[in-house]
Amino acid sequence: MSKVERFVPTGSYSLSSDAPGWSSTPDEASSKKIGHKDDQLNNKNTNNDNILPDNDNNNDNNKVGPTCWKCKGKGTLIRKRKQENNRKKIKLMTETVSCTVCNGNGSLMPKDKEVQSLHQPGMITSSRKCPNGWKPYGPVAHSIVQMNNILTISKDENDNNDDDNKNASEDGTKNTMRQFELLQKASQSYNIVGIAVDSIKGIVLDSSSSCLPWFPSNPGEQLCNLVGSWRILQRVGSHRWTTDDLVTAFVAMSETMHRLTPSKEKRKTLNYLDLGCGNGSVLQMVCWALLDKFDLCAIGMEARSEAVSLARRSLSFNIGPQCEENEEENRVSIIHCDFRDLIHHYDNDDNNDEKNNSRSISSSSSRDDRITKVHDKKFDLITGTPPYFQVDFTTTTTASLSTQQNDADDNTDATSLLNRVVSSAVINQGGMPTSIQSAPARCEFRGGVEAYCAAASKVLSDSGIFVVCENWLNNRRVYEGAEKSGLHIFKVIPVKGKTTRKENLFGVYLMQKKMKEGLNNNNNASNTDSLSVSPALSVRDENGRWTKEYAAILEKMSIPARHEITQTSS
Image 1 (spheres, rainbow, N blue to C red):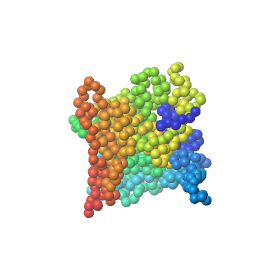
Image 2 (image 1 turned 90 degrees about the vertical axis):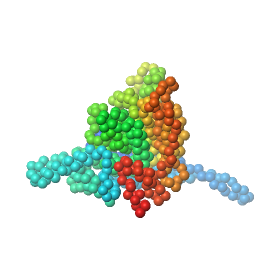
Image 3 (image 1 turned 135 degrees about the vertical axis):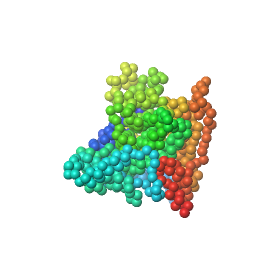
Image 4 (image 1 turned 180 degrees about the vertical axis):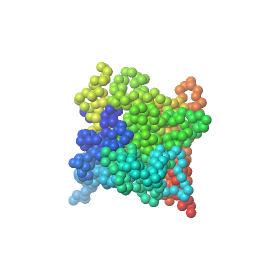
């Protein structure tokens, strides 16, 4: 029996694919490996992973794409037209025609840019253009420090012209050196897009090589600028960080600094959580801003395995090697999970009769332990950048019991949530992205803003803040989600794409827990703060340049922007 649902069911099935139901042939696609291995920081065994599921040895013509949003997978459309008969009477006629969006295929083909990236070497993008004398500030990326130290030592050894040193360099260290040389070359370039990983002679990119975790050794990968000297791994034609990520991180950083003034004498402890962290853009921007100012413990939660891998590899570049055996030793860590499991953790604590929900939590015991640790914490800062667009998921309930049924209580219903499988996902707002990684980042596969509010309310401290951005078309949903979750919105920052636009593009919302009756907590803004709606922030002016207000945000995040303002006024 099948039915249409708003979201992918929670449970182990939620992690069975990065985008359950996205493929128009789900049975075939689900049997193929999609993206990177979810729990591996090092990418040695991921060079052959593809961005998209495929058939027939990577034949581009056989790529599996999402169901067409226009014809809903039918491949045909019903077209109505008026026809005049001999008596000059108008009759409404209908005819079946091939869908003009998918050309009758019922599914959408991936964009050429993404397909071509599968055959292009990885790249380290060049440094951003900046005014003379401008230098990035903030904490220096670990790998930049490492690069400077290693290349300095190498230069000294070459100056000594020691044959023993030459022989010693013929091992894996030589490959590592060339990777750092490529990073240095890209960091010193400004007038080109970037440096391809195969541009320096001698770099070995096969699976047996000693590539550094952050090195973009896979086709289509790019090590891109983020903030300051920090960088982020992204794929061409796939999900990439955007303006809403930057503004959300800036607002979170600014509000935290305002409320918790850093102390030079004794660092304050700050627990930070990023829900649905994706590639780690917001998580790492916030960490860049707060890492040197607080005793920071940061956690990201993400369901897409490829995004988890990319984020962990980016962290290795910016912060340093991560401890996989004991994640508690990491100041910043990422958990591969569905953050909605947090909601079920609390639901089961509050209502022991809801045993079906307890079985919906992901199967891995180690993952459960990590979710429990998040569940047991209280966070001073939580961020979220929910997807914006609604999707209809057709689910079917399998007849067989879940493989986890043996672990379930005797009273657990055999038709638990774990038996619900997504057979198709059809977007009902706009078009479904043809990138399997972009789809769940932009579309509500694992919950909308309501789920983000519900999860945040479970682990937010009484004086903590939740910063979330949302499409302005969903403005009412934000208020409804906050109210239902016991959160108080005390500030809203609308954002426009351009000064000439009448409509807001998205908004950044700041929330706190509502005070319980009879309690008096002066640190809780919901007691005293009324709703404050700021004037809309415009990203670009009528000429397409950064506005002064947005340029100021970029500069505070160590991204050069003032030179554009100067060029406009001159």
